[in-house]
Length: 283
Image 1 (cartoon, rainbow, N blue to C red):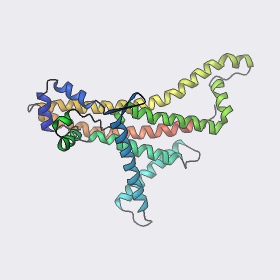
Image 2 (image 1 turned 45 degrees about the vertical axis):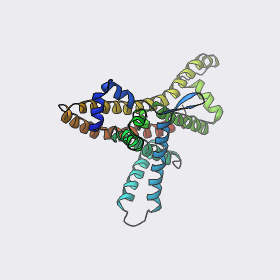
Image 3 (image 1 turned 180 degrees about the horizontal axis):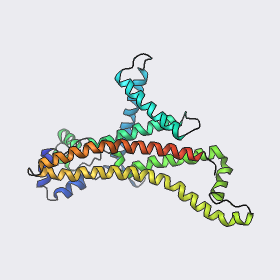
Image 4 (image 1 turned 30 degrees about the horizontal axis):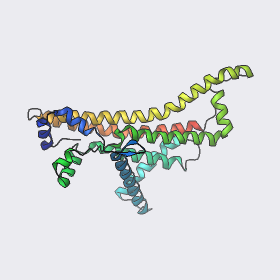
């Protein structure tokens, strides 16, 4: 993200300065659904990026040829092969559902994370050009869906339900329930099993719940911190004395942030596959 000079001057002149600027950019465009606040910007942008990713992959697959591939087709094939190899290493069952799931997660999260590289004031400038300064000043728009905990927790809970589904599918309803009370502490006698069952249930519940929480918080924490750091660097653009250092810091952080964008998408994908693979295992 970067800060345009006109926005920097406006930030310097505003009463709240950098604090007001950051608060404005950290505020979501919300609506009300069932009496609760709903982050419209995160949902709309995430949906649009997901549809865009599907369209791009579909368009390359539709034009795929057996001969010498185009650069676009070769790039898509590299991504598909890379994801498939990661799934092969982590999951040893039927990959017909898991491999497309992993590819969807990786590409979608990369697309959402990449929004963090767009100029910080680009949405405001577009709204200002279309509707005027006053409308833009009072319009909130967060363009990085993964910097919103609602987005990451929503994705993580879908993964959680998939873990439960595949556990029951692999072990059966009774086998899954039995394992909750008999693992990881196994016992031979009936009395010992009864005594240990509450401890086993507690540990299993903690283990199951920790998976979506860790998935969601890791992705959200990294993207939120990266977004906030871009906003703090933007404060350097408010003065011509610190403008050049601001440009250098902004460029340096943006280059390093590319690694974070790809790494966080990779980690979310791999952990999803690993968790589903663990759901097939019997204690």
